[in-house]
Amino acid sequence: MWIDSHCHLDFFPPPDIKMALQSAKISQVTHIIIPSVSPENIERVIAVANQDDALSYALGFHPMYIDQIKEADILRLSDCVKNSLPIAIGEIGIDLFVKNDNIQQQEYFFIAQLKLAIEYDLPVILHTRNAADIVLKHLRRHKVRGGIAHAFNGSLQQAHQFIDLGFKLGFGGAMTYPRAKHIQRLAKELPIEAIVLETDSPDMPPSWLEKNIQNQPKELDKIGLFLAQLRGLDPIKMANSIRENTLQVLPGLVKLCT
Ligand SMILES: [Zn+2]
View (cartoon, rainbow, N blue to C red):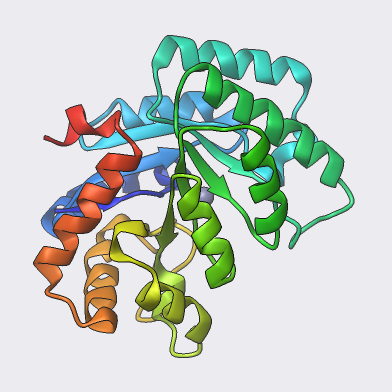
């Protein structure tokens, strides 16, 4: 029923991966998308995703790993994309929260990866922390076929600009905290057609998890129920529309999820 559109399952210790997958299925989380972040984890992501039909992957280099990236890595990424057919290019983007002295490098490799997405006609999974306007500027110049702005936390106006460019906005555990009024407002007011859900596990624990408990894809059903309550919607109907949104923006998933 639920699709976890963003989960770093390959970061879990190997014995935990099978368990996380099993408990996800019990909680009606029937599909999970694993984005890569760096040249080091591309192979691991593909290997983990190939373990089960409920898993798909995206390939790309995350802005927080950009200092390690060389031109040759982009060529290698292009080869991997050509040979393994990921469902998207990602996780790519710009992050000015953690570090901004390498902005030019971040932009350079972001553009290189947008060009790959155009070349292979793939959607992109975006990381846009404190950088929505810069990311939007590049999306206007390099017209990809849309995708997901993951863990969205920009303004309502920026959200609509992403939507106009063919993007869905990803919401997850961050909106479940009582103080997260801004994200809750976005999740409540944006058209339901624009929303997809994610756990970003093992990061971004929802509010109900104790500090020592690891976030897992199975939490997506409770995150979904939280959103249904926030919007006053029937959870099953809402789950169906969100599933449709995810399949629409990531067409490669349609074969795998039906
Ligand atoms: Zn991520």
